[in-house]
Length: 255
Image 1 (cartoon, one colour):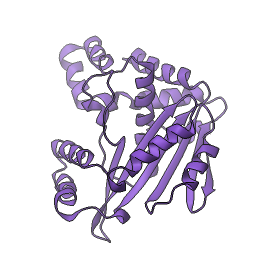
Image 2 (tube, rainbow, N blue to C red):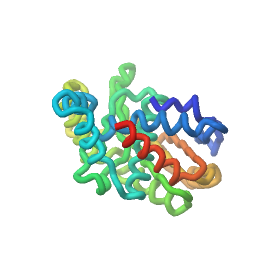
Image 3 (cartoon, one colour):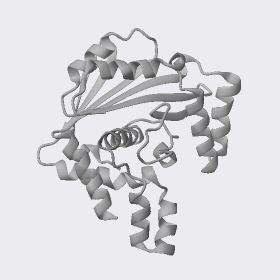
């Protein structure tokens, strides 16, 4: 748990029919935020079962070296990865989507970015007898800009506003490997047979920056003319790059 309520303040702003959640640090709670986020980072790069086996067989030093070898060393990739980790945690803690994967475990190389939808979460609406999908895009920048948000909006509108077939198949395969056979089959059925209607989709835009993003997010949503429901969250912290550096330093230091 990233314990947002312990170290963050949240306020809801409106843009037309859309809500925007703005999240910022509470005064004096920075270390709580760093510690809380650092605690969830390892699970995004390796499963707890894998690390536990290495601890048992090879000892703490070697298990720590294994995990450190998964962490990016590039500033820009650390920024992107951490934005995705925090965004995924937000979905877990603040929405009712039930199925997702920590996709950074399957990076080709620790200093390479992953392709495809940044976030893909799924829930089953039993009343309407259908799956529903959250398609998310994450942007982590020191200074968020209109151009960056335009890129995010383009990504969300790709694949006819729906999750990409690649992302759907990737999540289904990972859920299958984790024993979630029924949900994996239902995702593939939606992809291969039933199709996905726009009412089954929500877009999730998450930003992580040093500047307050409210004006930029309002303008971005005001320009949106589509029919897909929107979830928009902007987290901003002082000294964005120092915050990221402190989180990864804590992860490595804790082994």
